[in-house]
Image (cartoon, rainbow, N blue to C red):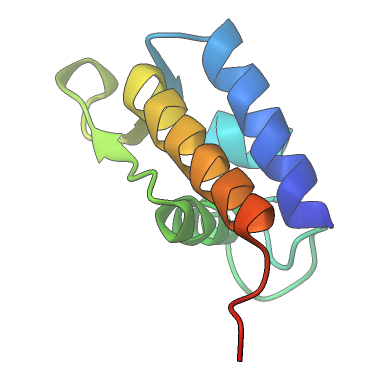
Length: 103
């Protein structure tokens, strides 16, 4: 699904842009557009894409943080993000190997 594709793309971004990536850059690269919905739209304002992306990142356990170099704007710290994504991937693989719980 789209979330799995975005997750893989996030891994590539983090590998390519270490040590950090501005949240708006991540949002655009992963398909969230400024101005509303996932593919653009009306009425949500310029911060809608990054805000939706930040919420999705948090759902994965990746928390965008402000840094001194970014003057307070949010950044994705690549090394911790890659560790979190790797742990998430390992957990999903373990769950798939174990299969459904017996009844």
